[in-house]
Length: 527
Image (cartoon, rainbow, N blue to C red; front, side):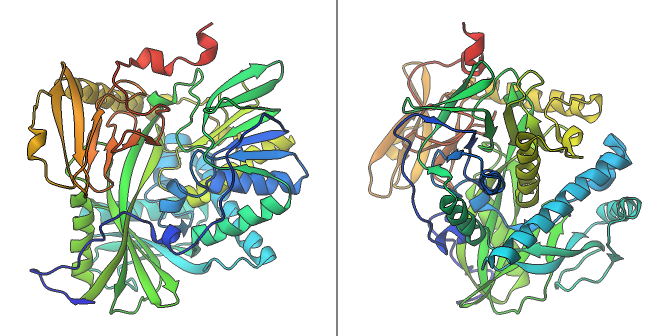
């Protein structure tokens, strides 16, 4: 470890690798190389897809699960892994915008998801560092101290066990804090590693590096088409690929917006006092700990912003390091990583039939950074729909909802932002000199009337891509923290060589023009 000083802060790791993925090895699975016919096809190998596979396979259904990359490689593998129903300042807002009963259902759905996870872990003796902790929201300003008092009143209305306090176990200067009792933390990859093994043993057909690109309907069944030309026929498709790979007539690009947040794992000289923490005022800060064979690690997160927008992305990691510097005298940063999360217009996830006329195309997205419990809620709710069971939460989460307050206001705000970024990118006339690029640097320049991106890797090789996003035609920006090109409109991300890292884009960065209309029109509109 290094002795902490203002002039010599610990180094940030060169590569962005989540602690969860680095500390746990997963088995690999083949690419789909033949057509299939199953009861249910699940698209997306994170917590939602794998949990749904666990539930449905237990009911003896014939299930296939495909993942575009590796299992647990997306947002689930980049989480802070809090298993809690305390989702920031949400319950007073839900009461005001939806009513007391819908707010209570949101809480109960997440509480039941925690119970499901706890029962599954105990029943199968899953070693995943599942530990009970109290969760705390804390405020450092008078404005947010008052908001915590209002949120506490919402807790009281909803019979949520919590306390308002000015004293918390963590050594932080605060104005106020609100606890939610008996929540949990865990190691998400250890947990899902066991679920993968469980569903594999039950005969679920598992495929990695298999990208779904389209859905077509055939009578009462659905056909999922993959990028390598294979087809999977099923009675139901569950789409839990984070950003829905299939827009259909729902136009998800206009109804959810992407944000990135950042995390560090830190070995420090201070014993962890217990609890999980989230700062409510800006800048956001999250704190929890993780046990390891070498002692406790602090997991520190925060710094959320719109994908592809704002300052140099490495500055967010540096801001978290400065926060750690305020907490510790002596520490070492072991990992750094970031996550991309999607938020719906009214902050409630979309879970259910994609549209009213497509009851067997089921969707789950918009978890708003709380995917461990909301993802489990989605898996349980969608499995109930497949099994024909009644769920009390269907109306709250149904994707076809569109309330005037607050959805319309947020809809307008977010899509004005998209239009602004689209125009801004097209108006970028910078023409930097790529010959002056140092190793591990990137820039944009103009060539043949178009905007290009250049990155010189650590060995000196130059990589040039067209910066027009293949989803809707916005211009991508460089992310120095992840060495990627990120779209400021809908959150697509590409490697420095142009390959898709994260949707909604399906095609790599190319050298021809794309328009939003061409990209967003579903196949069944192009007949």
